[in-house]
Amino acid sequence: MSTFGIEEEFFLLDPATGLPAVPDARTRETLMSIRAGDSRSQHELLDCQVEMATPVCSSANEALASLRGFRRGLATTASGNDLQAVSMGTAPLIPVHPAHVSPTDRYREIHRYLPGISGEQYVSGLHVHVAIPNSEAGILALNGLRGWFPLLAAIGANSPLWRGEDTGFSSWRTIHYRRWSVQGIPPHFADAEDYYRRLALVLGADVVLDAGHIGWAARLSNHYPTIEIRVADAQLRAEEAVSLALVIRALVETSIHAPRNDSGLLPELLDLAFWQAAKHGLGGNQLDPETGRGIPTEHMIAALKRRIRDALDESGDFELVDSTLDRLLRDGNGARRQRDSLARGGLAKVTADAAAELTA
Image (cartoon, rainbow, N blue to C red; front, side):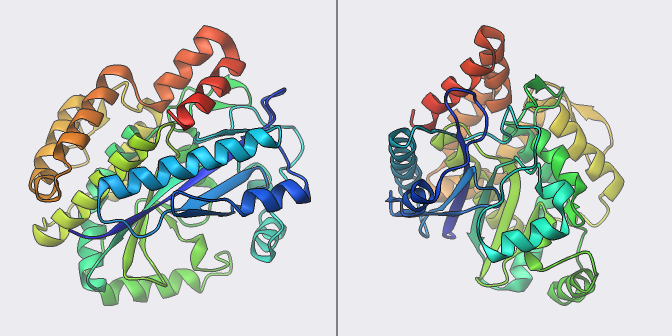
């Protein structure tokens, strides 16, 4: 099976107000020096965020150990500096003034160019990197994933709240990202040459600062032989993040070794299915991008399991993925659990429960 890696983005909150916190220089240095679970911290766009990256993993156990270890280290460090760390797709409460951007040259350049977007980019995602043998295999994976991106977004929806209120969407992060210049589900590519030719045209546009602005739900890495999938919100629990990563790895493997021709999928239906997934999460129907009809979410998940069963059996991950997906359907994903917390005790309960789930 392919190796994989996970990047998670976390928010730092003021426990007294629930607002995103801006660490001072000493605290920022402490946060950026976290080394736990064989992972390390790094800057994200906003100063109230911390990003982590696992080492290259071969198994679920390696990934779980890395995520759990880092989350414990982050929680301890944050608490020791009067901060609250949470893993949510959006900060549920944000200030009226523009966000503080991380003190790096690249992020400051982005903010100078896009202040209206970056100034309220209070969103955090789960990024999964899967090794590929070559670019042609990467294109098979990109094409094979297109029809599944909406369902992956629905499963990983964990951002229903914004400015202290329910947005009516399960993944407001997905909707928020639609404001960037290059986003959404990537087009179908004929082959690697077609991909790089069209990518060069996009990168040549005045409004695309660099390759990091390619905000498609998935893209080929510029630096490593991997495909990066960026479709899910940051997850409340480590095992949910890892299970999503295992699903994605299995989809990549299946798309490479048992490809299907999806060139007929209509981009307008894919985009609508993506929007519908952000709206409903797991709580309503999905739009089947092949037929354009609504389909119960549990039927789509059953189809997903059938598609990737062989890959999951080969890696030994079927039991973990199957039990996690069944639990999310039964008990709710992050979006539903945030709403349940809101109903029980308001925003303070939401952030307290999210802080507890960080290391659960």
